[in-house]
Image (tube, rainbow, N blue to C red; front, side, top):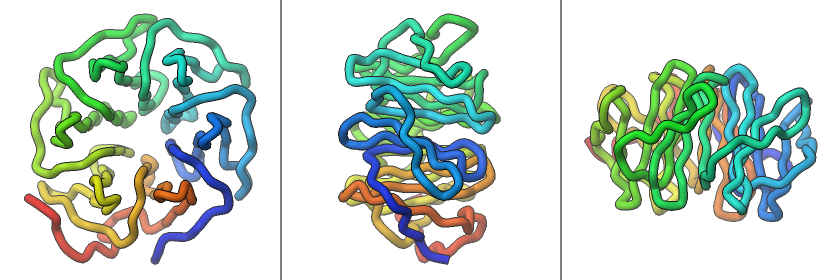
Length: 223
């Protein structure tokens, strides 16, 4: 199975379960994919995160944070430039200084480390990428450095971890090795059930349904 082009353009997207996909475009408009179409949602955002339970959080260019409650945006304290949502109990983010935080009750708790991108799943799997492009996995106490160099990473669960490098090449982590996928994307996302989505350098949107479960890998980039 190959990548299937989807109508529309986005700069960044996130996916929870199945095809529950949210994204933002170059004008900071917010969209939700529903019944095979993109539907614009009120508000503006630079970055969006969606969990496996449908929980949605956004960050705007003023670094303000909002979460979706009863079809409206509710402002949350704090200041972030990137956010990731596993579910309502797993929300992580990065601020402008590369500090890393997770949400605990009504507070942001800072964890050690310095990252430019973080991704959390509902099973507490957390991965991140540093400014030097090193890849890290959170073990509950500290960040373990993992082989490879990526600019963005996304985890649907412990079995589904996907990322892209500076050349927009796509890789999936399996059994300690990064395997390369066909195609080129600047941003990727994978659902808890293994559905892949991505955006290319022209902001065009793609998906594939083979889930990366023994999919068409054709080599390993690094170990």
